[in-house]
Structure formats: C-alpha cells, structure tokens
Amino acid sequence: AQTVTQSQPEMSVQEAETVTLSCTYDTSESDYYLFWYKQPPSRQMILVIRQEAYKQQNATENRFSVNFQKAAKSFSLKISDSQLGDAAMYFCAYRSGGANSKLTFGKGITLSVRP
Amino acid sequence: EAQVTQNPRYLITVTGKKLTVTCSQNMNHEYMSWYRQDPGLGLRQIYYSMNVEVTDKGDVPEGYKVSRKEKRNFPLILESPSPNQTSLYFCASSFAMISPLHFGNGTRLTVT
Image (cartoon, rainbow over all chains, first blue to last red; front, side):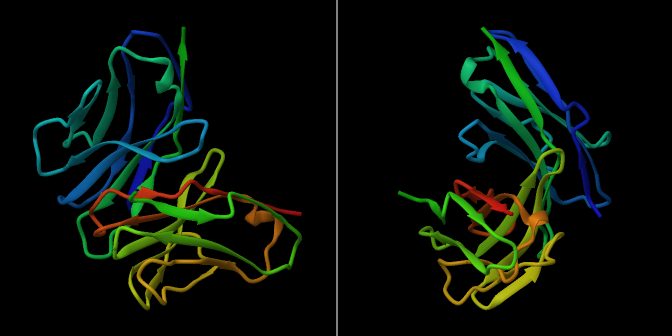
C-alpha cells in the first residue's frame, strides 16, 4: 500500500522569507500523481499544486514550487516570499494512475508565518 | 459557480441516532468520495464512488454507508453513530480519478 510521510508536524517562517515543507512517499508504481493541499483556518481544502510523475520538470504556481525527486520518492513544497495568508495546514497527497486509485494523504504540517 | 456543497456544517448528535450528511456537486463529476480528518492522522478515505450505483470502500468504512443514486449526490449515512465517529468530514469530487479533487467545506460532527 502506498504511504505518504510528512515528518515535520509544525514549521514557522518569517514573512517574506522562503520555507520548504517536506514530503516523502512509498510506492512501487511508475505512474502516479502528487499534490499539495492547503487547509487554512476556514478548514476548506484548497489545491496548491500538482505534479505528474512522468514529468521531469518541477511544477510551479506563482510563489509555490515543488522539488520532485522521483528516485528518492521525495516531493517537497517551497513557498517563496511567504505571506501571512500562507499560514495553514498543508497536506501532501499521492494518487496512483490506476483505474481504482484513491488519494492517500500525509498527516499534514502546520505552517505559521511570523509578521 | 462550480462547487461541492455539504450540509450541515456542524452537527451534534447522540450515540445511536441515525444521521445523514448530504453532499452535492454541480460539475457533472463522475468520481466522488468521503474523507474524515482527525488530528495527527490526516485525511482518511471512507467510501468512494466512480459513477452512479458504483461505490466501494476506502480505508475506514466501518460504521458508514453511502449511496449514489444520482450523479450529483453522494450522501454519507451513519446508521448508529458512536463517539469514535466524532470527526471532521469532507466530501470531494473530481472529473476522473486522476483529476484533482474539489472539496466541500466540511462537516464537523460530534457524537456524545
């Protein structure tokens, strides 16, 4: 079974600085998708970024980018120019490309942003 | 506006009293699923549905039922709720299983 590990339960970053959130996963499959979701205090789940395993290029969405290391099974999220609104819980998630795949989440990391 | 609508947002009930949490999406998505979120455990899948009348168990299906009679609706039923089902519940949908999920706003359930 696939597992997703977020080993850091909490992190803190100074406003305008850069922070990297770690995520590792375990799979024997070659076709899969990786996601980062943000959950602010409003508790809504918001998709931040998505990475297809077959793409070598790291995904980028404005201030958010990933460092996808397929061989190491690592999928870290980098937030540049951190803003107060980035304070939230962040979940890493994995989904295989198979017909009956489900989304498997990590336990999440709480990010606080210091003004 | 494209959205997944869950109701209610908050629910307090007593052990054994049957309840239903509704979920509806207006995006014509085929795939829908239910998750529960507990501190330190992340989100765990309860049930999912790949289309009308097609449902399957996720990781933690015990104590829950679902139905998918229409494409847009996917209610979660707790026939006899117990305190260990106190949790934050999310409904989600996507165009296909590999597409990003759209989440509802969550239902905070407390069973006393």
